[in-house]
Amino acid sequence: MIVTIKLFATFRTGRFGEETREYSATTTVGDILKELNLPVDEIGATLINHKHVEEDQTLLDGDTLSIFPLVGGG
Amino acid sequence: MEEVRSFLLKQAEGDLLPWKHHLFASTHFGLTMGQVEKFALESGLLPSRYQRNRKTISVEEQLRLFQTHVAVIGCGGLGCYIIEEMTRLGIGHITAVDPDVFEEHNLNRQLYATPAMLGQPKVEAARARVTEINPAVTLLPLKCAFGKVNGADILQGVDIVVDALDSIPIRLELSEVSSEMNIPMVHGAIGGWYGQVATQFPGEDTLRKIYNRSANGTGVEKGLGNPSFTPAVIASLQVAEVCKIIIGKGTTLGKRKLHINLLDMEFVEIQY
Image: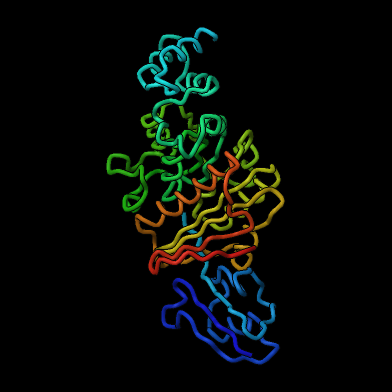
């Protein structure tokens, strides 16, 4: 299946802003986080098509996965 | 008190109450500026200082703003701007909570941080500024750290709470106490070029969802710090949310978070 991955803010540094990649049918959000080597404790939000999802969520063909880093200052 | 109303109606220019008469009424009748403002608004008069609000906010809505009590938790980058804007908007009662004094590293962004204020409590600076800008507004300064232990006391009588904290664990405690007390919470957070805003109404658990992976962590601010413009943007969005909750207009960020990237000028909505 084809999934579009969008990275936001500091996660773009040394990676990419948007890429389309091919995955097997059972791929989860967590699998992609690991593939991209994104540290779990720095992840603020993961979305599929604008909706918040957890790491165990399975992706579907044509989905867009957006990944944001944590923001906590005030 | 009918005497006060008659005086105000007599001195009004159209339906505007000029500052000089507002001030005179306060001195002459031995009332606070806030009490005079309440009389004026209840009589359908708009203190002239709010005349540029009026196409956006009616006199009746201005009265609702005046009667609302908002707690601002944290008086740093976000908190100072939030307090400034709420004071000019005419929100009548503000509680400001922060344990800190101003330090040199605050000078790049915190509105009330000046060289002369170094070493002074942030909440006292906020109180002085509010009195200077709009003496009809009452600000209660609480120089303490918010936590689960004192949270219920701090939020007693508060209608809306604004999260201007710089700690994720304390944010989650604020969310928990606000939910238990049925108080809407307007969340804001910043780091470098980036920020986010969300509104959590009682019964919702948006904050827990936002920080579910890193309840004890820190965000991008640890590596990026905070420049001057990011807190001003996020604070303004938070005050717009507060205003809409009070006057019941528009669409709030309930169950939504806005992620703002000022480096690439992107605003992305996330649904929770």
